[in-house]
Amino acid sequence: MSCAFDVRKERTQIIPLPKEAAVACSDTIGIGMWEGKSLCLMHYETCTWVIGLWLLRKTNDGPPGWVRAHEVSLGQLGFRQPRNVSYVMLREVATTTSLVFTVDSEAYSYDIKDGELKKNFGQSSLNIHL
Image: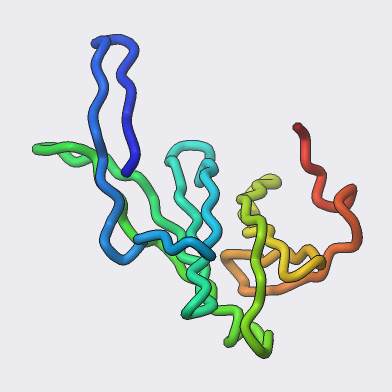
């Protein structure tokens, strides 16, 4: 479940997660911005090896809701055996949006548009600003 805050109108609204994004105890989730304008839920589902990207969309006649925008299958990317994904985030540089994630102790980035997977070396290559 997620919650939306409207500071101008001073109210909150509960936004249920989609059933398909139900989080099991071994799954990994993250929240980020998609193209600088939409909230994005990243959900790695351990049992399917898939990272799903869900965008929060406003509707004209009802509450905002989550819409599945993209999914990345670790199996289709060439990973074998069940994998431990402990971290997911979105990284935007110019017009490129990348999904950055760790598999076991290695960091990878996946270009959403062209499907290119790169292995990153060390945390400094991720340009993470805390």
